[in-house]
Length: 47
Image (cartoon, rainbow, N blue to C red; front, side, top):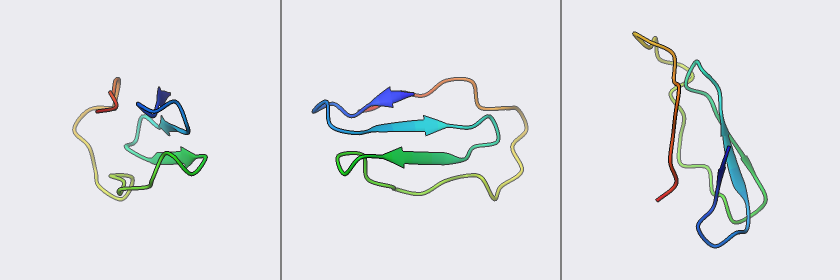
């Protein structure tokens, strides 16, 4: 889980590349859940 830099909202990421957003501060910018990844997603960071 990554908190939005302003503290309002957060993202959760699944190992298959899926992205889930919560609260209005964390806008959905897309997902790689429909792609075949060569390795599971293991980390992320908010910028």
